[in-house]
Image (cartoon, rainbow, N blue to C red; front, top):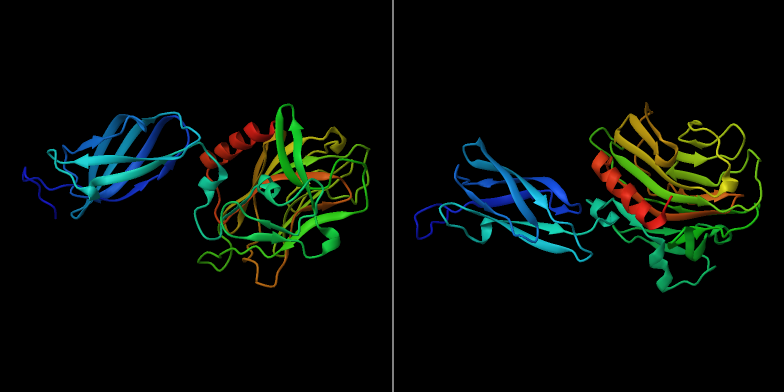
Length: 342
């Protein structure tokens, strides 16, 4: 215990959640620790925001909790750490501080564990030129490199594509043009972790997709988007007058890919037996039951960020070993809308 000159015990902080914020407005933080007195003072630096309220409880005889609401300032592009300082009667130590990071949202904020990944094709511009084939695709968040199992199927790097008016970013896939007989995809083992049941109990796969065909394509055998984790098909888009986006079952109405739509597509699993498919631009959000499946074995290769016969461009992508919350989903959608348009 730390006594200061005033004879008060200084608060001790063990954790704060969340540790990072990216949006302006009221945010609730939970600070866990000990020695939080009923009259404890909470100092929030002005750069982080303004303190709105404080609620202090004692969950056990040895632990304390402070739930505080802060009106957070609008973040800048430069991530900044701010220390929230707790004190009893003016007394505090270095252990009485809780650090919060304030920054504009990027998918890096979603990388919470060793089996969470974010790929950003803009990162490839440092080593590739427009039209180059992509033999390997390192993640920008997390630690996994996608590879192309067959050299003949390697996607191309498309540099500084105009996704929509004023929205320029790079991608991987096939360049604009007529439908072809080619397949372009990554074939890679994506490491994930099972839950206590021995199956995947949390998973989010989200990506930005744009079809680039300049000729009509009505053949039912064309799959511009085909996504697996291990041997498990998660989502695909099938061209044909009665087909569309699917998650192992055709779930959406037909879209004409000749209109070159941009789509954000999400597969979200928050339990071993429940999946949620979200296609925001189609106003599609449906939850259904699935058969539990386990994380890929080391020899199970995933077809990923790929498809066949129709020129298709892939933007950023995340694979997370947990089901994102509605808030996280909204943050990611807002970030991608700002980057790619609709």
